[in-house]
Image (tube, rainbow, N blue to C red; front, side):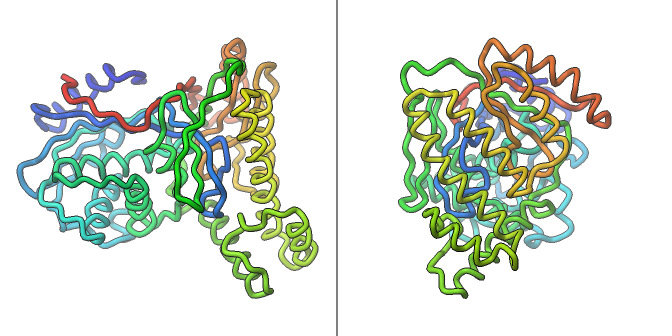
Length: 412
């Protein structure tokens, strides 16, 4: 497993030799993963968001190709070979021919940038490698952002508005690939800063950096990769849950409620009224609302606790969110919950829950440093017994908070 930049550069060197792509003159752009502290699945429901960038990355060595040709090779998907195409010559959006290849991301970036009037004349040669788990820490958003930023750079195009970059990356997944993701992943990667929490207010489309309060107890962010492979969000429970939330908003609007999203149900009396009115006719919809309404109330308590350095309270809220995701939003999965059940028994684990789109992928935990070894031991002992099909595929990642984007001008 590659764990640092130098190892990644050496891996890229080997991969370039396999793909017969010359590294001379290449830079490396590194884009992070993310760890959402709140609200998971809140972005497409209109809630405020808070999270950090974490040190599992996609590294892409790149340079101008000298023409309109794109040539890219990923060490994570060697079976796809070298992805080659001329700018502007991409398969149709959401077409079957792109559904099973990672090439849908560079295709989608080219397609969306051109659709949005951003003229690309210069392609890139690129070699990529990543160590982001396959679900829960936003590998797809990290890749889309890396490709967009690199193509804009080699074409001499500067976009100062970071939220514009976020919108473009979301469009790659929504409109080209067909994945109904929100903006949480892109925001928490593009804007993340080392040692800071990133707070996003959707009403203002604003970013604020919030340090952990002075005197906070030391803790570690731990990602618990189940070894499962989640299909794209377009093929998962995520799509169903998003549709249910949108359906319920339409039902409530038709009933006379002045709402644009479930996050508009902020008042507990309004929430109770809706649940009483629709609890029998729309029980599943009401469960989704219960989670969003509860998560919003917890969010403000979590933010206050973070600012005050009360990390134990942050962890307890993180755990409560996980129970809500499991029991009310119903978007977790058996392997994800096995990881949570295992680490919940370890003293020094402050909170745990599933991460990301749901079904498969990774769970996460906030852990006191002295408990990290016990967490690793509990997972190593218990997980293979509970999930024998993934006994040689799971991993525990101890993560740091990092900048979301970094460029190495002279990596070799």
